[in-house]
Image 1 (cartoon, rainbow, N blue to C red):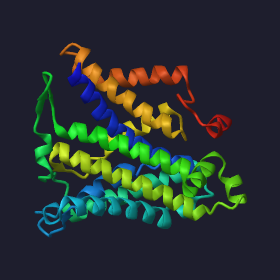
Image 2 (image 1 turned 90 degrees about the horizontal axis):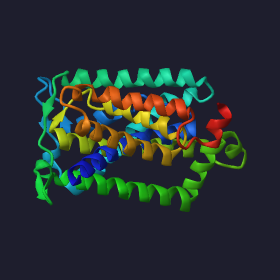
Image 3 (image 1 turned 90 degrees about the vertical axis):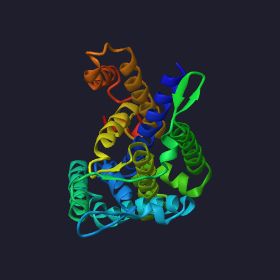
Image 4 (image 1 turned 135 degrees about the horizontal axis):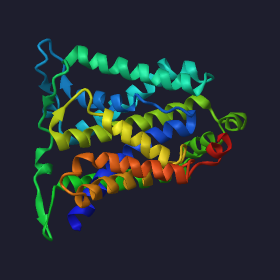
Amino acid sequence: MLQVLFDALSLGSLYALGALGIALIFGVMRLVNFAHGDYIAFCVFAMLWPSIDAAAIVFAGNLPTYLLIPFILAVGAGLSVLSEIVVFRRFRNANPATMMIASFALGFVIKYFLLMLYSSRPKSIDLWSNLTQQIEIAGARIPPLQVITIGVTIVILIALTAFLKRTRFGLEMRAAAENFTMARMLGVRANRVIMLAFAVSGMLAAAVGLILVTQTGTVDINMGANLMLVAFVATVIGGLGSLPGAVLAGYLIGAATVIMQVVLPPDARPFRDAFVYGAVIAMLIWRPNGLFASKAAKQRV
């Protein structure tokens, strides 16, 4: 049970961070940013020096941890803000479907930019490999990375909650999420709020990328795609525009995935995801607006 608990919390934390990054942007701009998964890959590839023969030199080895983490977070924030300025700012008054298509296009641009620099071959990287060595706790084999992932996620959630509730910028973001037009009429600066939301979302993508590359030890152009899909599903389940709902749904999907892997017969385990998403369909039939749909989302429906 302890093994299952740590596995579920660790995987759920990863999904929760991804869903939170998507929900932040949707709450402010009503945009489902499908380029979020490519932000994750870009942040990880930022640790490699590009070279002509695609034999990348590990950049992570040249920076201590206390400099590497802020560097990658800054890369994620910078890429996300740049995408808002160059791409999404021009589509603010467009149909949501148009903005969604623009996010798909941006994701392809980022992916093929990385493909041009590094090729499609996955690359090995030794980043904090000692954190993946399992230690035994009460009969359970738990890597320290799982504990760190859970702890980091809790710290991020507490810090983000305090930021949204106790700072002026957080209040402006919450007001914009409820009614962006009214918030602007009351003096909220649209560009500042949106850029801040994109910066936080980019840093969350960078944090997810660091966790993923430490877990797998490989860097792959498509490494953020699967997580992006699960994070989007979690955002829908939690209720579009609801940050607590996105986090809770991420943990629920993580727990369901781990539990299905344990309880299903060995022959049925390859179809684990089918059972998980079947439960997602049943839940959405029961609550089409999600678990914690915002007032604005309910009005739109």
